[in-house]
Image (cartoon, rainbow, N blue to C red):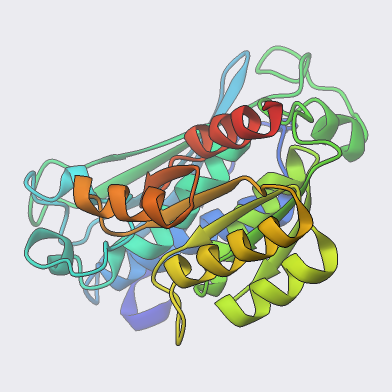
Length: 282
């Protein structure tokens, strides 16, 4: 029982969710770590499972400090670069929960946070779709591969595409890489502009998704180098900028540098998927 916090578990009925077990373990690990962190010694953290006919709810409840109403809109956001005020009050809360949201939504599920206020604890609810025929009134065994093949949202729309993901934060990179692979893409990953440019030269990706705030060399510099290479090759590689800055000026700078689209962080995966599909269709 870490830090004197009691951990309790309420198992639900045996059901088969449409999910990658390793990624859902990562989601639950993030939620439990967060709950334990914000629950004082002598408190309690509970995980419970409740199944319906078409989906299953996984609840992580704690008796900790709760979530003030002014911070609730920011719970699942990764800190934006240059943030101050409400975001920083989380003390690091946002990153793990932002990754959890990416993974859950990539499985066609949803995640919500509830709290009655400061000192009243918090409840996080993860809802995942069930394999048809495995709901509360019927349980049957199916292969894991068959379950994953039918996962909501994993429609293979990126099949045949090679996407270069440039992101210096390993957890975010890992989550987005996995979600794009779920949709059929071959994903190349880079943690810096220099590494990314080498991959563009060698692999000729179908599309680039790049953070702007990279170490040593920015994403703006990277896309300018990519466009010069494109001109030599007589092509144009579709490219999406992702940034913690969200002003109109930042968007304009990214587009002027050579990006085809601009997404503010935290990235909604469904929005990213739609933007990738749109650019590839051109």
